[in-house]
Image (cartoon, rainbow, N blue to C red; front, side):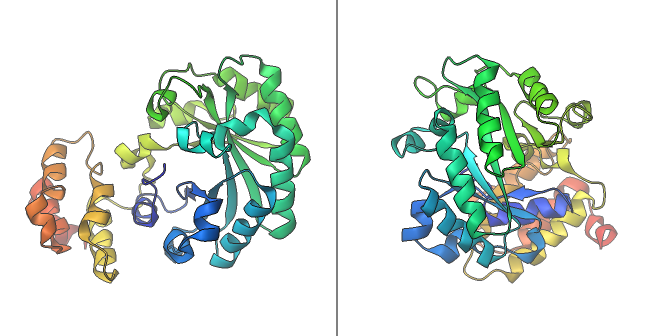
Length: 307
């Protein structure tokens, strides 16, 4: 979710669901150690609970960045051991590290020494042509011994050569039975399923099989799939207008781009998307555009009803 789940998107999703655990985009250790830390780590208090997701392979660097995450107020540190992009392969982290469970275990161990927060791991079922469940079981068992209690499993192999990151989310076959076996073999661990889940019905179908479900781009394109029913879409729009008004030196476009899917599947979804992506309207940089779009898709009086 790099360049997707930034702080504006996370604030938006918190309006859709008041309690779902949110995760940052993957931030590399180098970006934090050598870059603009506030730009990467600042977030709104309304986002809690929220986890800082880190990418890296040097235990001390990860521990140092986790300490920054603790100081900034994050609720969890998540290590990304599942990303298959060329960028992470060149840096020898992400899904490459599934072949080095002892190193991942050391990363977890050193990170836990530095911070009192939960340290979790997101990973794949395997790498390239490795189809053996024992490979996955060994990885989880080794890393679990270092103190990781929660594993978020993208239920596909990562194909490191020949497939793009997008293709890696769609082409390798889903291996839900592997994830279920992990829960059977490690009942003391929290096993969270990721990959291929796009509807409430699919989420409900995982009850009793795993401890949770993570959605990524499915929730980005159709945010309402995670609605907890507390707020209406109109309520969310009003909250986002106030949020935009509170921001300084942030263009409306930076927030509106994350809201394009709010009316996904409804009769006027295209009109909503068109209004919030109109270059001329966005150049006004006026949060009232959100209200104009709301009136267009829900009809006159929708603002008063939401208020």
